[in-house]
Image 1 (tube, one colour):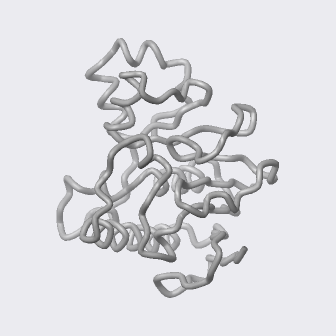
Image 2 (cartoon, rainbow, N blue to C red):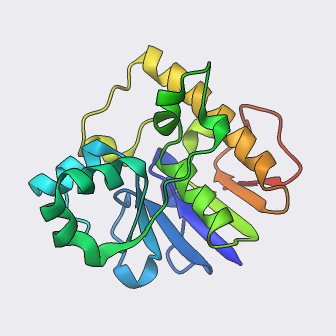
Length: 206
């Protein structure tokens, strides 16, 4: 089964609507896309839940797959949970051990970002045999800018960019190794992947 995962990087526009396979999006899609086209949106952050609570962002047109922090947010705010419970397709609280860096267990959920969770869910829960990833620019460039940054403030300074990109790439390497029977297809304008390409990773250059 093919699953497409739409990230929020600058090159997410490589994805063409109508592409075969089920579609997971990360937070807000970078362009307009209808509910019928989307299997679910994946969210992991407190700040996204806060924005939804305050009405700054509207995502109730989609089903939701939620990580640890959104689950905690709803436990703290049962009124929010009741309001959006019909949107919740699944809570996916799994954070793999390889997301722990330098023994900092408390940072594992931070290291395991929205894109990581979406792809892991596709592998583990949806039983995807091939995954096509769009807009995951940090795998190729020192660029962690996201469409979501236009809506929610994030630290994109040079030091934080280097730290996060390095951490995220290590998580990706471990995830690709965790699912050796899944074919991962990375769509990007160039082929300069920032780590040695595993056998189960295919680069599709647009």
